[in-house]
Image (cartoon, rainbow, N blue to C red; front, side):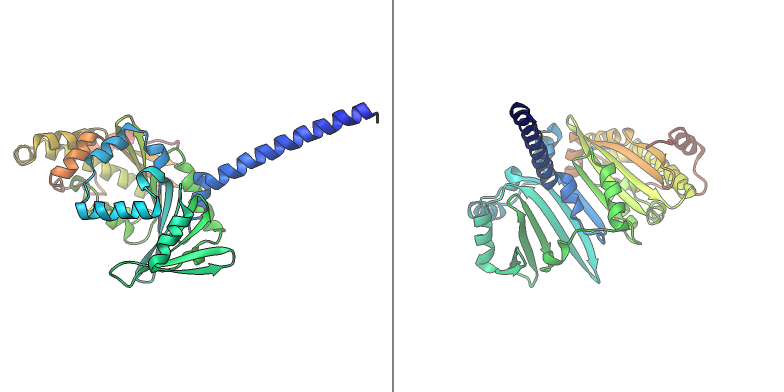
Length: 364
């Protein structure tokens, strides 16, 4: 090989190697800092996982409306948080980018494990933790154990990187840092990927009480024993929110054990929506409920859409509705809606049945 040709070959090799190194560095930084890596660290035995991407939410108009209507803290809490900010240099409204939180059952106790991305001053946060806590070393990991004021409870925290912090209650953070694997990990990952376009979502792996608990916390017009019973049959429940201008589009989905359960749940939800609208238009409600609150609830109910989703192996029911600034204001100032009498699950009204059948879908 001539010297000139050898030089050109070496140059080409160096160019390719440099490009490959650059792409690898960008890819690894993306994986380390992205939501996929954050969610991949959630324990597979969690009962529920909540994810919030504050970096995506902050610029939206809905977030501005939400912060405006959020309850204000007391002066004592403000003073305490101001001191925390000075001591740690961390302001969640400014410095927290995204967080994933897992809830786990350990006997009668409920544990939490959270991993957060943001801008942390490691030196200041470590010093703040050591004021009342202790430091342990597990391998290459530095763990801080901090007691909670006024109780015997404690939390543990560790820096996974300079921009990623893990925290758990009960001092269990070292045991929760192992990489998840197996069929359960694939189940969680499939649902996380399904919700990839939403900056805020929750995934609940069903147990005997999750459906009843979710139904009990629903707006009054959506509460019923029949709904609780059907929700308790669901295998997974996902709730995702995506801002659209000054509105938050909520998409809730439940995975049913079979097509019959999916049909019953879709019919029941459609009936609840219709009956809630009828109740809001009744003369008694018009007299008792503030007109602006009533219009806000009606606006939300009119946006509701119930459909069935067939993914082959899974049958799901999807409920979509919009949360508006008017609804946020009404939720703070007005009493909850009274629960309507819901239709029987095995014999839904003809109007409800027709509406549900029209909205049945066979695509994701």
